[in-house]
Length: 70
Image 1 (tube, rainbow, N blue to C red):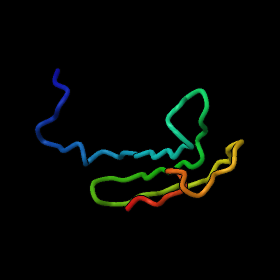
Image 2 (cartoon, rainbow, N blue to C red; image 1 turned 90 degrees about the horizontal axis):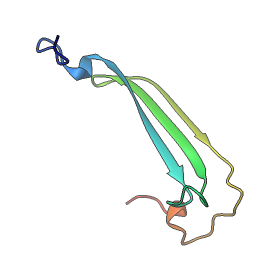
Image 3 (spheres, rainbow, N blue to C red; image 1 turned 30 degrees about the horizontal axis):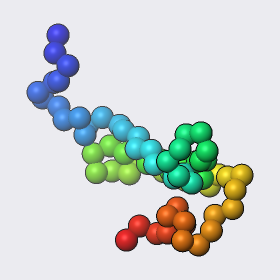
Image 4 (cartoon, rainbow, N blue to C red; image 1 turned 135 degrees about the vertical axis):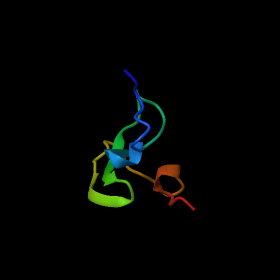
């Protein structure tokens, strides 16, 4: 038994990529504020999902979470 089939590519399978945005890096103190998911097969987008959460703290200007990625 082999785990890799030489006749197919892993991109032939359906995959889901998840993206979590948080208020920081501490599992004890910080919260998830946004969840995104993309379902794809090869270079085809099959579905996507995005939702915002509601952290129990206010985001302030200058907070790295509130800044767009350049």
